[in-house]
Image 1: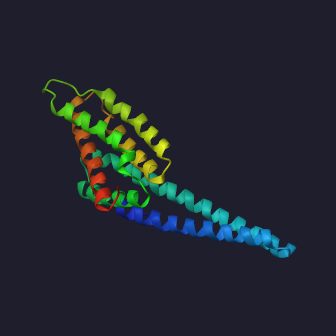
Image 2: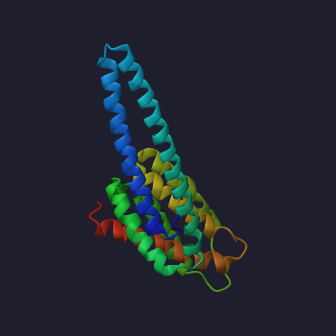
Image 3: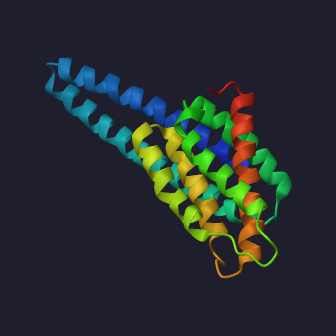
Length: 202
């Protein structure tokens, strides 16, 4: 299996297409099962429905495995590694979020908080430390935004950004490293939103 995010997303979307197809087939067979008066046919349809359900469950687990692989790539971006992949991944995320009906208004509050922290951190004197609490508070704010929106796109963005924030806070005693990683995180977040807008997202 690939480990490069754009390839992983393509692989995941192919499987998601198959899941949609299986859902449609299951629905159609259930309808036939309900309408059928032939016991043998009914029995055969029940078996087929179970087979398709198992196939669908297996495909859903595969999607989750790929999604976890994608999330595990995020920390390297926040640490300043794999920058070419980061930009290409942001483009893919932007397109995917637009297709999954994410609207910027659903995450504007979180983005506003990030910009506020960024503005305060840019005014820090050399011997001053970045305030960790507002960064930590972004995690529950993301969870709240996702729960409120109840959309796949918002959920996925929450997963990605939460992984990024957790990476920023990994070495919270090292203020310089936190600041450096926070800047990378801000750029990462901004690039996703820029590509989302470029794809026609609202």
